[in-house]
Amino acid sequence: MDARLKPYEEKMQKGYDFLVADFLTIRAGRANPHVLDKIKVDYYGTPTPIQQVGNISVPEPRIIQISPWEKSLIKDIEKAIMCSDIGINPSNDGSVIRLIFPELTEDRRKELVKDIKKKGEDNKVVIRNIRRDGNDAFKKLAKEEVSEDEIKSLEEELQKLTDKFVKEIDKLVEDKSKEIMTV
Image (tube, rainbow, N blue to C red):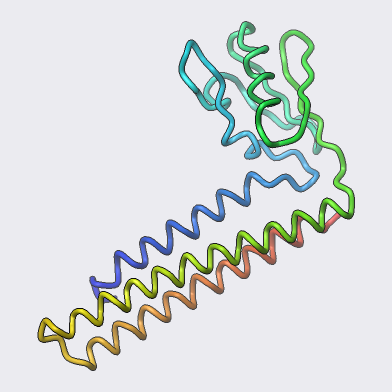
């Protein structure tokens, strides 16, 4: 691969990786500890990820259990979860916090699938914008004594990269949609 394509491939990969991470935080009726990835707890005045203040486990398919390393953090962790957008109220027994995930309704599943498809489309737009930026940059190379054939070749390689990432995004959207719709 031409070194001039590398920055565009890296940007496309970052966009794809962001979408993968985003999809991990979408709950599908089963307990997935990744829904807590974006939640930060006030730990002695510093916003700290929940994973760094306690042990997170999934004792049952629809329950996440958080065992804080310091019992004094229970209230702060509960508050952080309630302020987040995961839509689940935590319960605690004085030593651990439990998040019980309800079954998703059919309507909610359809909404989630619609949201997943929109995020997939938005990500494809990002990939295509990166391709456009690359093509613009390659056209500017024409002024620097680069042959038209070479520019055409670069544009074709960039199109192949774009197609590859769009295909991967489509597969990711399809797989996540199936996961959500499976009861």
